[in-house]
Amino acid sequence: AKGRGRNCAEFYTRKMGADAERHLMLQSAMRTALAHGEFELCYQPKVALPDGQMFGMEALLRWRRPGHGVVPPAEFIPLAEETGAIVAIGEWVLRTACNQLRRWHDQGYTRLTMAVNLSGRQFARQDVPALIRQVLADTGVPAASLELELTESILMSEGTAVTDALLQLKDIGVTLALDDFGTGYSSLSYLKRFPIDVLKIDRSFITDLASDAENASLTRTIILMAQSLHMKTVAEGVESVAQLSFLRRCKCDAFQGYFFSKPLDAEGVTGLLRDRRCL
Ligand code: C2E
Ligand code: CA
Ligand code: CA
Ligand code: CA
Image (cartoon, rainbow, N blue to C red; front, top):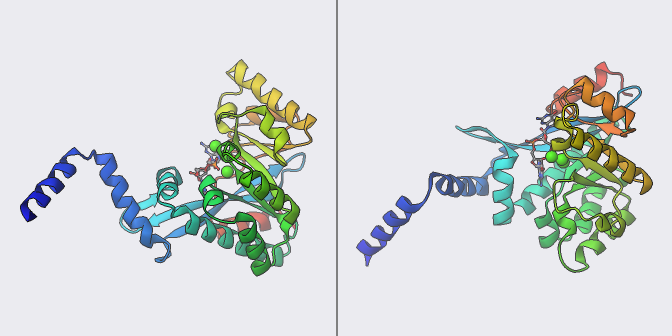
């Protein structure tokens, strides 16, 4: 029996692609990463015109894995969602981001907002409104200073649980943003049905605004639609002045991207806030 077990193991090892093997390694490393303090947050400013005011930050997760450098979130978040690890990780992100925002508020940047990305699995597996209430109470961050970025897939889940959760979140007073807008199976009826405050136009539309007439007209249409529904718009991935001036002409409300700043660690953001006199 022992021998057969080993043959099976060998068989699976051979059959497993390098990708699958890497996934298993990542999954087991992820189990201890939180306890070992390997996760970090960086923050990317959101900017409003005309004055270039940095009114908010988006918290973005980084995994500094010993011996492997920084693992990008696109690589481990889908796995964390599969295994359910995203629940504990997401809670850590929320607490860490709110603690950091508290510090910035205490330094005088009282109008600064913080956006945190939420995964659909968090809604499926835990009482998100209860968690938000708890974290706001623990950190002393005002509800109005917290924004939650949700993806369209969250809105597509069956039943009324998600609608209920989003209505509760609105009652608490946090802002709800729809992330990567335009990439999912967006149905315009969702926008009416859910209490969304902000549309974040996906970077894929912004990237070739200057050269692609269709993306330009889609972007313009998304902004007009958002305006008519009394939603704010944020453009992701703004890298050039050409993109910015187009978006500005369309009356996009806010911008995020390397043109203004890459995601920075907390210290880097503190420096930026000081230099730009954001008080
Ligand atoms: P996202 O929410 O759409 O975040 C924006 C991504 O675009 C970030 O990548 C950011 O670094 C990148 N970016 C920002 N400006 C520019 C630009 O001008 N040009 C280019 N090329 N890229 C830009 P990042 O940090 O690698 O995050 C990737 C995705 O991982 C995020 O996409 C989000 O979906 C997910 N993610 C990150 N942190 C968390 C988290 O704490 N929880 C959850 N559930 N998901 C997260
Ligand atoms: Ca986001
Ligand atoms: Ca996004
Ligand atoms: Ca995106």
